[in-house]
Image (cartoon, one colour):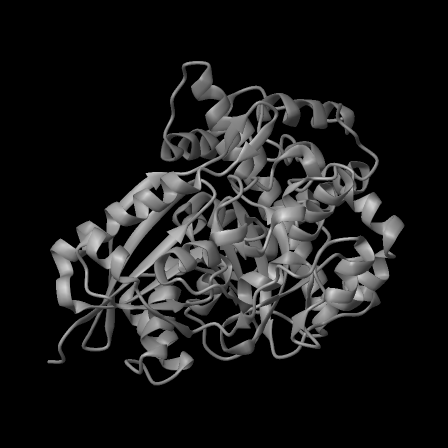
Length: 500
């Protein structure tokens, strides 16, 4: 029997943060969640921010737990987070402000402003990234438009995982997968699209070097190691964008498969060797993000379980607390196909009263709104599944080939109702799991980097035999096909629908 080796994976999401220890032993992977904490925006007057110092403290608390439990078994640490958000450091590497949350309203109207400065087609040609107002490009443009003094004193821009890696090691770099989420990385030239930023009026002097996924950044700083009671273990940049690590863990074999990495967001796509940047992918607003092994994750961002999460928070504020399992059970008993929404409508982007917004959307698209909590959740889940069908159809158009299997990974893979809905809507076999794909991917990339696993294919085989997967065969073909035709009319109406 081989001696077990362990790795720490910090998976920091938009709703919660997790510290997971992955133990690799005898060709199998075991994950243990050692610490979880809530995460989310903090409103300061009219702005939304991340409380990064609290997150950092939670990370150190987690490392203390790991040190006492695993000690010298720990071989490496990897950090991944959501995309697009960033921190600015000034002289002496001081943090200039709490980073903004991507749902902050400062990017409202920035797409139009950007297109006045540089045509949409040129931005896509240089970056290949889906247009979303939350992207780093538009956050920085909003600072230019508002004459933010922070730009005058900033010396380094670090994406969120890059910030925590800097605090762990003292090394200021940007990892490939997270850099690509900015919409100012050029995947053809493999570097920052500085000329694009300059035409926008955005500074470029603060952009750090970019390193590949799986780079050893260095040993943990002595001051941090002494603080948490750990040796100075190696800090490795996995795929620091959480979806990048999740996709690295998809337990797939062969070709003709796609993934849905489902949590607050649902990112649906395929792995390709080269970016797909053409008029068709621009028109359909697909994206080319970086992945492990210099792969491109060609995908579409879909608003995932956000609508359900915000409904739950709205009801909690009214004194009605429900678990996600309780809400899913209510949804399973609710009337099917009562109403649909476009999950990606701009009205649903910002936090707030989601049931009200969903009702208003339904009324404006000539539908009877949901009435019960179960109907609201079912509407959100059915709409998400049908949007996945729409994306699948577009993927097949762009690739010119049929996709046979859909892999659902991440927290959404635990929702058996959603997985069955996706199978029904797409008429494809859905393989669900692992739920902790991001942590598993981070751990296996660390193991690959340090030579404990021989190849990415072998890493995926380890994951496949280490976790139980759910299999969902498509059902109710005719009912879902009829629903899809109706859903497409709602999407068309959605384009002209504005909610005040």
